[in-house]
Amino acid sequence: MTRPLIFRGQKVEDARDAYLVTQALIGTTDRPQTKDKGCVSVECMQRWFVHLIETNALPANERILIGDILATLGDTRFDPTTYYLPKDKTWGFVEIPAGKFIMGTRQEDIPALMKKFGGDVNLYESETPQHLVDLPRYFIARYLVTGAQFKHFVKVSHYKPDDKDSLREPDNCPACYVTWRDAIAYCDWLTKTLKKEQKTPEPLASLLRKEQWRITLPNEPQWEKAARTTDGRLFAWGDEFDSDKANIDSNINTTSAVGCFPKGTNHYGLQDMTGNVWEWTRSVYANYPYNLKDKKREDLKAKNVARVLRGGAFGNNKRYARCAYRLRLSPDGRSKYYGFRVAASPF
Image 1: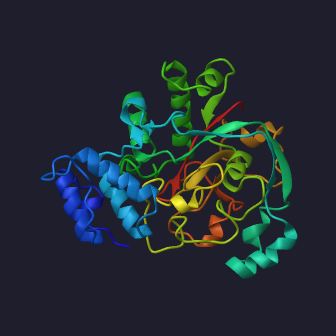
Image 2 (image 1 turned 180 degrees about the vertical axis):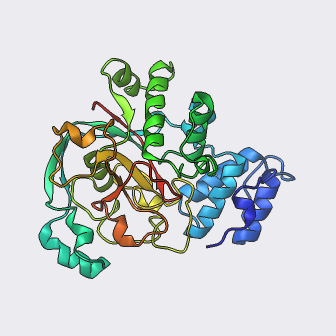
Image 3 (image 1 turned 90 degrees about the vertical axis):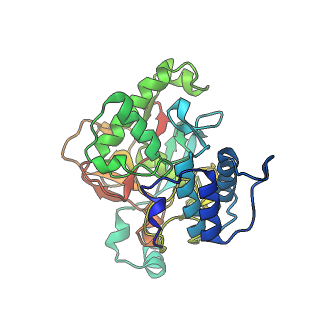
């Protein structure tokens, strides 16, 4: 899908522009309700666009166009007074209960996966052997870290990202062109910030201040459990791929505003666990089974080691969207395809 230039890098001047452009693009005759029938307020347009995105009321390509317009008006799902975090009671952090889950892929399932999704055996073998991992509870972000969140961090902390393109994404799209180092720096800043912030919601505030939890990248098991829950499903929503549930393996060919694929919301209420951008984890790439007691596996100071990304990105084939798929990359890697989400964790 090719977008008009207005949606990336140009400003929609007011709500009337947004309304008229929307009519032209999607042919809608619906008009948001306002007290003054002679105008369309910014606030009304913002609410309308969020509704169109969150209710799956339009085809995917049209939802993404709406998301781009919403970025220029201001996406009301996020609060600029609280670091552009989600405007909900938990600031977007979702609790993942303690317990065991199925991690990885069974060796005997590889032939069927190759037949269904293609690729050779090497594409799947790093996911074996399948094993149970028992995790304590943790929290993970409902959305990917957005352009607005990352740009705010850079502005207030005077951090210098490894790639200036990381500051050019629309505010409600995933931050991308971020290296692993950039992602860790954001996490460290957010840990310190939320510890000091008086409005930080419970239980997050107490966990950070009293129990020394921190905001960090999820490790591989945390990411995979959050994505596939406890039943070993292939994708965040189930075992069958559906292009209307994720920004991957389609003709969209770019990032989309977070949460544009509500049908892909998983059991925990998480968005974009499949597709949009690859997500950095804090884990060093190594063979399975995953040993949580192995400190080298999550050594944040280790140099010249590959880190793991999960989830697939907009330009990938659906085989990479499987929850078990692991991508290894140098921590200096950066592109339009790479972003991250944060977790709150005791380790």
